[in-house]
Amino acid sequence: MIFYIILFLVILQRLTEVSIAKRNEKWMLSQGAYEVGASHYPYMVTMHISFFLFLIVEVITNNTGLSPLFPLLFFLFVIVQALRIWCIRSLGTFWNTKILILPNAEVVKKGPYTFMRHPNYAVVCLEILLLPLMFQAYFTAFCFTLLNMTILSVRIPIEEKALRDATNYNHVFQKKISES
Image 1 (cartoon, rainbow, N blue to C red):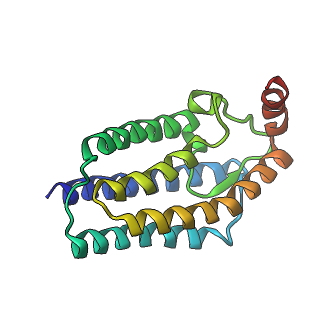
Image 2: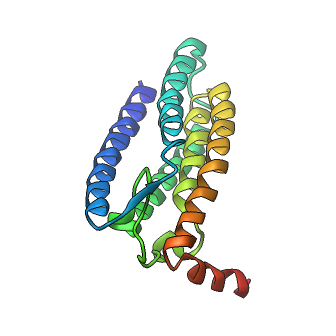
Image 3: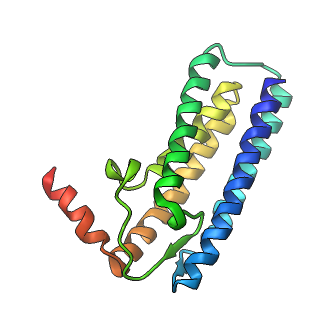
């Protein structure tokens, strides 16, 4: 029963995020933004939908129940959800599931973006690992962690190049690199 409650809440959260992303996309496009990386976006969406389908099938067919580490994994998952909300709130209208670039925009460097370039991607990586592990869905955790890493290995360079070319991204993050 706990699996279905958590699954329902996570899917509800994703649907809410899609609504936020659509609203932000509309605003950004009205401000002159453009999309990059559109060719890989359908694969990313398919991967995320497939993640939930595989998770459901594996949990139902294996019927192994909660992980012995469920309390710890659930605690970490809740922390990751708080980080997700912090990411979305920090980016505000710039947060999106697509790569939308607003030329000459100031790069957001507040909240978790103060500490790392792509905290939202870190959140997604952790979710794809933690959610299946809570329910001993090891196949889903392993396969979708690899798939997600593959998609991010394409997505992040495209996003960073577009940000470098059209915003102050180079200046903002060059300082951080040289300070290290």
